[in-house]
Length: 132
Image (cartoon, rainbow, N blue to C red; front, side, top):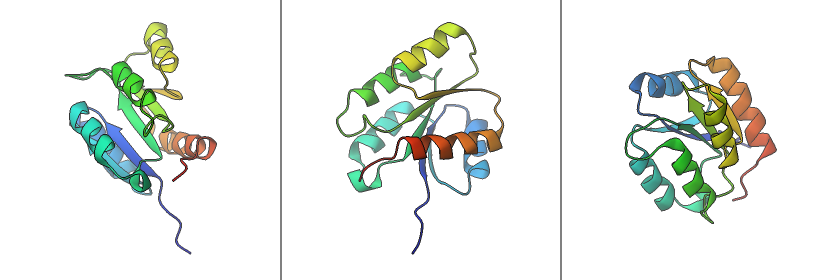
């Protein structure tokens, strides 16, 4: 029986970070977006059976910041149970607190270790399984 790969949606306006996700998380099924509006449309349109197991969300982005995006996900019946990890170069307590307050399950500070991120993804997706 084939084991399904963990599906990750990663949203970041930094192409280097997106490449790091694509190349470093090859054991996962990774879909990346450099524009949060495109990511939101994808998540709204994707079939429930194809929802990601986890979302990696940059905090500082154009058009819509990560905190607002997390709040929108949390208010959605379809997307509300997907765990979101906030990823940011900002390490101040206020940003961390806001991310967690508005629904992120974890917070990763850039630059991050890709092996540590893999471990967190596995831990979080086992703790918050998505029912399909």
